[in-house]
Image 1: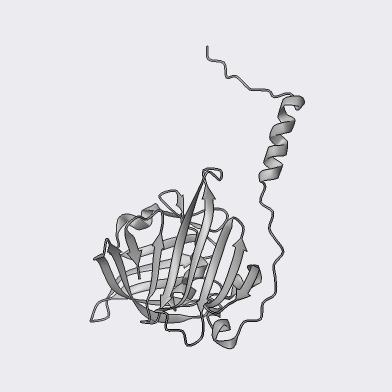
Image 2: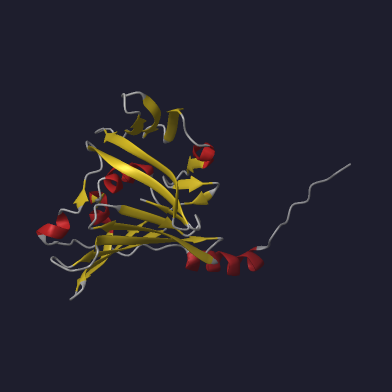
Length: 231
């Protein structure tokens, strides 16, 4: 007969562990109100009620492995859809995100990669169980080359220097550094963001980077999607 064993920890032994857990708890710094110049403020938009078209590419080690022309539209309720059409208007594939269900639905031709995409209880995307550091309802902003206006309500530090504007944004365990190039700067990009979060109980950090370039492309690279670049 198998008997399961329970480990009991006396209060004297448990106290140091409780103190350690309390010291490791995430304490959010106070948010700050920022007044951005007009050119920088225009980068942050509402992600709902937007639409557009984009040319999507997945590159691995500099080589294009997937490419499609896509149209997308986001509704006021937070739902959005992404579709690819043939030259005669036939739908090749369609992906729908339903905010209230926190789920994706897909029809038509698509890769098996979507089967590995999930949304964790804290609202962040996961791919093959690994956190990607982005929320699905943020993507309509990224599609149009913008950043979510909601981020401006989560700013914990802000400064301006000769290179541009620097904002630090905290959303739960995700810490995002946003850099906006100075107006009229010769930089090849308009803005870039790097989001970091802890994995394995803080033993390691992972990150995802977005960069909006002046050639009208937005490039996404993620540390846990090695050698893959989406634009």
